[in-house]
Image (cartoon, rainbow over all chains, first blue to last red):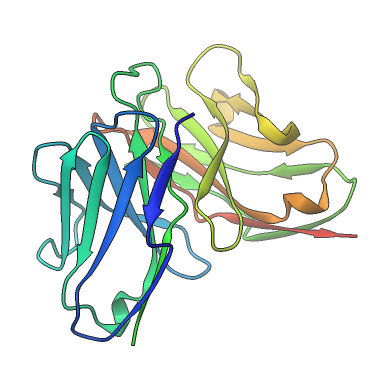
Length: 119
Length: 113
């Protein structure tokens, strides 16, 4: 149980285009989903927290107009990288927290990640 | 501010040898602590977690971790390492009402035949 999927797993795009990454909780409802960015050989950096039906909360230094997050349902959150540039190339990972599981308040289940390459 | 420190960037052990990966945290209250493993190009898989109770926590794949409040540590251990354990290991502490996780910088584990 508690499986999170991401699509696509890998995407290559031209500079200036927009790319949408989907994060789905397959067998549970997730009121909260998180988006991380990971540079090579580095740790995960939280970009934003996404709550179903409300605006995402972005971490300091993350451009909310560039990284658009939508959490339209309890099983789907999307991250759109707008007007992508080569410096946006990275590994993007989403995670989800199970709705209603209070005791595991902080536990997150992670997707397999999306490798974005901007040419 | 909350933080997680993994002092070892890279550790190499021989297959069959024991393993201990260090993790120290800084947190004002009782922490929620996690260890995740990441294989190359993959997402994170939860190895084990500590919320409360018994300070020695058993996880998957033969891993265990011990919470030591006096030392602010949550070290990960395995008695006998397998070649398939080669990966990146992340310690994390949960914080905040949103359940955010703060990750350490990770420890890369290499396993010698």
